[in-house]
Image 1 (cartoon, one colour):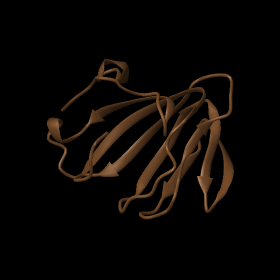
Image 2: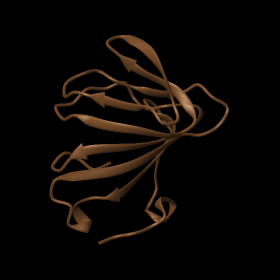
Image 3: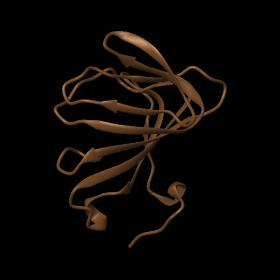
Length: 116
């Protein structure tokens, strides 16, 4: 079993093209013995964004704090605290922070792909 405050997990900073103002943390992953899923926490600074990309695996997202938008089927859709987002494999997607505070979301992916 593992219990931590997520800021204790090692931080990875993404702040150059194609991402801006993004930090990511693997909070549960293969190093913890998780054989089926990987849980990551991402924080996007105001004005920050993830890269626009696709990959074969799905994502399950829970928005913990802030507000922003997700690129869905070529259009931006508003998201905010307490929203959940499902992104099927091979669907183009991107997140951006449109608010004045940090956008924080939990992202689950299956085991196997790169964890961060």
